[in-house]
Length: 466
Image 1 (cartoon, rainbow, N blue to C red):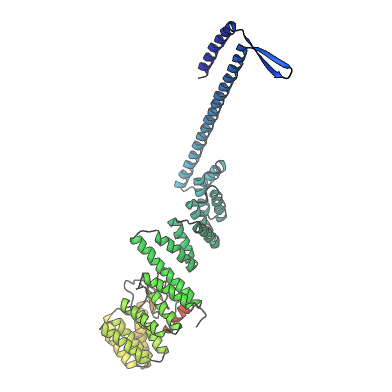
Image 2: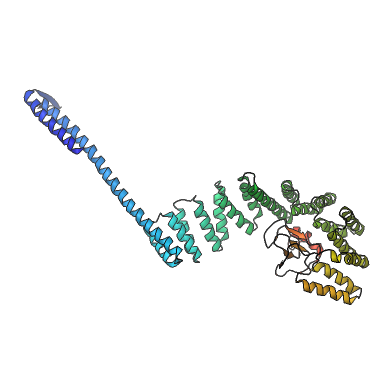
């Protein structure tokens, strides 16, 4: 292009020389009040032409210069990228060989040469955390977030750093900031929820779970999220109940039951709140409705406790008689009726029922303990010893009346959520039997038998409150 322009300029110059010979007229210009400048017409034409040519050359030269600079930059960037890729490849080669110190060394060099390499910073921080250097991991991941605060991978990585360093409040603050900005990445929300549940921040966990459950369309995954939502509603209700806010607790429990009417912990909690408020009739009706829906003996045991507190043993006997009329021959109900007979001092009736059903189920320690204690009080030492031997041979916790049907952990007290597997609505009354599918049952450390009366009242009342 430059050669063509020079050729054109040369041709024009020759043409101008000839025109200057043919046109010798002059033009006068007054440039000052008393100064006049006289120039040939062709001189003016040449000056105009020169200025235009200079402008063209300037623009064209500047364009060439900018193009050269761009090419130089692209070349440097290409070399820089190739070098980064080479170091990145070497890093993964060392990782695949399980040479972590070498991988860390290469990554350190990589991020020193390329401070904005987010992938390298992310991996470098993860490896630092894996090596136990949580302080270094936090520093590196914070540095990476300078380039993109909304990168969910960096949010999750930094939260994992905080958790590894036992800085749970910092991790929660990080997630909370993301959530307030309407962040809705499911993986981030799931981690946020997990930390909240771990710290028993039930109300905050409920708000996160509500947003998470709404993000799924109808299907199996949504059903799981909604089920978890029910459990968190229950926990909020339990928290409010312990704080003395029974009205708020009732609303939370009803909210859980609206989603899942068969959710036993929420129905027990609702009945408890109603009884505390003096609305005993509603509480009893609630427990009866729960028994009708689920057939779980948890409801009957709670009604049993209620009638004992009121000094109405006849109502208890009527309760179990009606239950057996509804399910004749049910060994679990028969065991509970025998247990009630024993509590009321009716040992002969209790023992008769126990002996009648002894061979009809796989009984656990509670059954044989009850039978053995009755024999012992009746001074029938041989059958009493046989019962206690059966307890020892079972290799089961002999005195724990509750168990988790999910993980088969035995528990001394009822709870809305299993402390071992963390699932809600899985703790049932063992009814004196071995849990189905139990091979090697788990027992919480320090578990011991407590009076049945503590099953629900103390759970919802909280520690130190009677």
